[in-house]
Image (cartoon, rainbow, N blue to C red):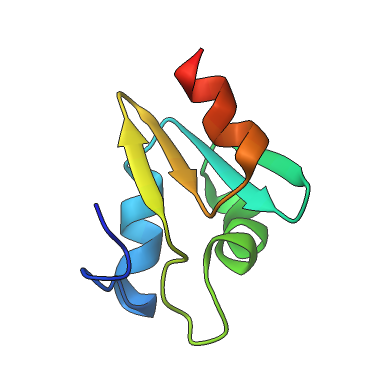
Length: 80
């Protein structure tokens, strides 16, 4: 999914994030990993959305995992 071309607004973001078993979010130099549930909903939404409330780009699904935002190390790990 190209989150720049296919905008996922605030109402749809949580449903999208719950579709992943694990959500990895780039936050500066850190990579935060979440198992989306009600206990971390607010924190996960805070990290996975931008100022407008839309899903941050890029957003990538590989199997049951979601990767949100850009971090060189996170995408480097995916290449193997």
